[in-house]
Image: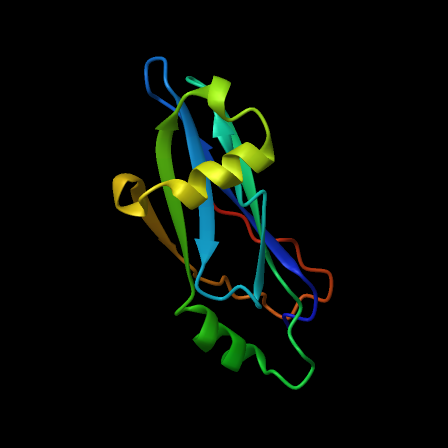
Length: 130
């Protein structure tokens, strides 16, 4: 059963020539998931690993109910090139995202899918990438 928090990882890679990219990750179910980090930067040729954590559900929530609800869940990744000299701190990065017209950012959607746990009492965290 899904009685513990379960993690998966989303890898964001920057294959641009020389640009630094800023990213922001949102979810359609913020009470069900924790995203860490939910924003950051990726230098040219580098990658960032984003941890997506499904919180342990309330005891009254059945696995089938959780899986049915979670299959509707999505993560949206926003990416835009930035000048790293203008976004040196998380506060500056938050301000940049607050001011940016989000229609100018590239957007990618990641859908949730659950693997059956096969009733193992000591199950391993799920993993994935996009």
